[in-house]
Image 1: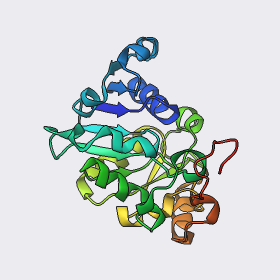
Image 2: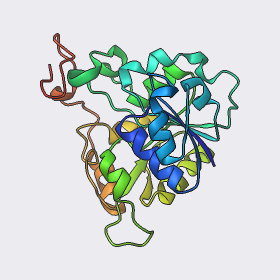
Image 3: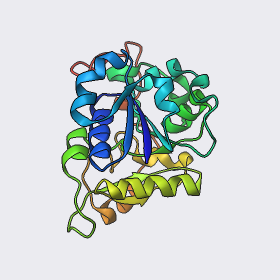
Image 4: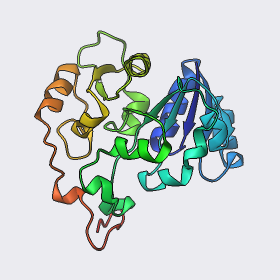
Amino acid sequence: MKIGIIGAGNIGGALAQRLAALGHDVTLANSRGPETLKTFAEEHKVTAATAREAAQAGEIVVVTIPLVNVPKLGRELFEGVGEDVVVIDTNNYYPRHRDGRIAEIENGLTESAWVESQLGRPVVKTFNNIAAAHLLGKGQPKGTAGRIALPVAGDDAAKKAKVLALVEELGFDAVDAGSIAESWRQQPATPVYGTDLDAAGVSRALQEASPERKAEWRATDQSPGTLANPA
């Protein structure tokens, strides 16, 4: 499968390595230009490209950059890209650590619904609740006891099915987490976030989630700070 990845940070880099190792044709972009990815691209057998090239690269495009930078991609990013192309959103809202205040999210819009509004494309949300190191190294064959499960939320059944299958191929049980309107169930500070639960555990955690965003995950007048010193 041809897969574009926009963002070569922790999650993007881990996905690029895993997907290329599985035999997928991966095109990877970052904010600094393809020349800065030359060493990584050669080592992991991926194609370094611009964001626009990555968006046009395949059947699935992963957007995995800091949430605050999503508007910089522009709605024109996907101009000419077929409506059947799946867009995966891995992003989380970190107002006090990185993103500052995003009013729509503070007022209750789910993170992925906000991403959709910025890109002008529907998205499927996954890979947002797992640590990059675990995404890179903790995939297991199907049927392995305690196999880590990942929630997958989206509104288009066919597109979600492709993502569910991709999650399984990467070595994780895929759990249908409902619609994008329900994707708050896997946002930061929910029971499934930052955990390595199995499929039963993920299903239970999604049901136990509360839609109320905790104070530590809301912006303040001083936001943003840093990871070490959130504000």
